[in-house]
Amino acid sequence: MAEQPIPRAPDRSRRKRHRSTPLAQTPGAYLNRVELLTLVPLSMSSIDNLEKGGVFPSRFRLEPTTRVAWKRREIEKWLAKRACKRVHHAPEKLTRSDRCDHFPTPDDLSRVS
Image 1 (spheres, rainbow, N blue to C red):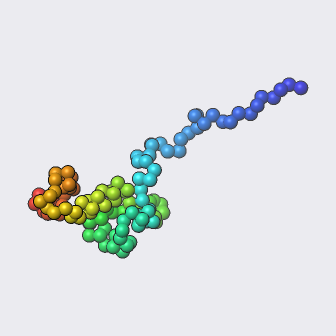
Image 2: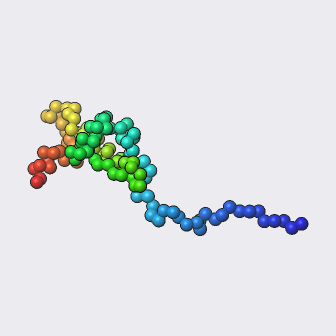
């Protein structure tokens, strides 16, 4: 009796890819509602009000579902901006590295326009 060839797994390198373009950002780049509430020390209703006022980063819908997400990068930037507004030192003791020059304040934005 002749030996039969051992069956091999299909060659996956020739298989068509389902995604035509690579992911733009790394996994974890987006926050769902539960993850957002663990990072931001506010209630969801406060976040909704700040978002409507244009103060908080806006959410986007995850199609085709009704779920929403926020960009982690925007939330972290908002938290850093908010933390930067806190005063930890007396104004005369602030050094250049202590100031938050890279985040414009609302006063700075009103001066530009």
